[in-house]
Image 1 (cartoon, one colour):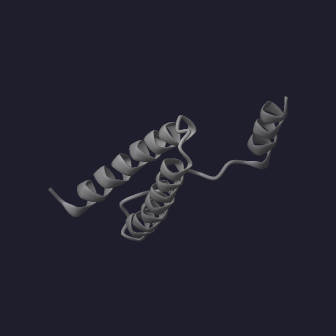
Image 2 (cartoon, rainbow, N blue to C red):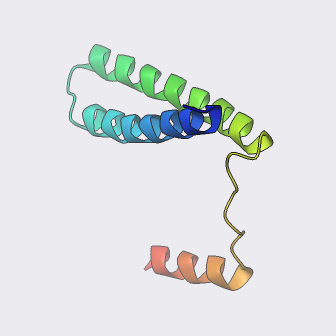
Length: 81
């Protein structure tokens, strides 16, 4: 397996795991467990960002086109309703 595939697979896995952490955190009443999950989530987010920067620098990931001001305004209106 080439490096690009490995990096993209890991990024996808982290994205999935971050969603799972969020669900577990919101369903956890035990504060010690909740804090541990939050710490794991934070570490995973930091790792994901570092790996993303590596992928972007090597051309493995192309960021989507930036939103226009009209698109941003439209989303802001939708969210504030």
